[in-house]
Image 1 (cartoon, rainbow, N blue to C red):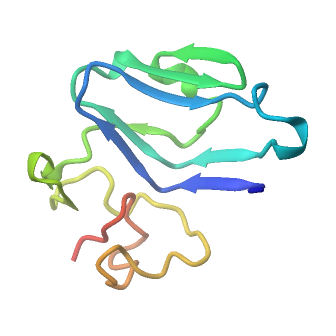
Image 2 (image 1 turned 180 degrees about the horizontal axis):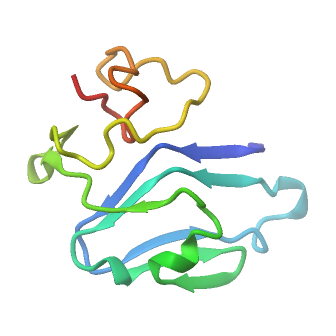
Length: 130
């Protein structure tokens, strides 16, 4: 059983027409319900930002501004990956995710085992720009 799940500093990006972020606790037995906290994530749909749909706690939320109730520091921008089509999720030098992360415990290294804080703050996403 997982409790108090924190989803911080992630880039959630899709290239299809719709993006769904879904958390439905009413279908989960009471003894297994968890507390999920979203904070400081960057969301991007390269089709259209308005097609992002969130379903949280049984409530359907459409539109990016309404989701800020659940992720108060949410960002809605193109993350500017080096080469998304080739699955290269490293950030370009002008990415809006650079130095925009918030400090969290145990996030000392990125996916390539590089030191996590290179600039003034941690980068959002799985890679720290060098």
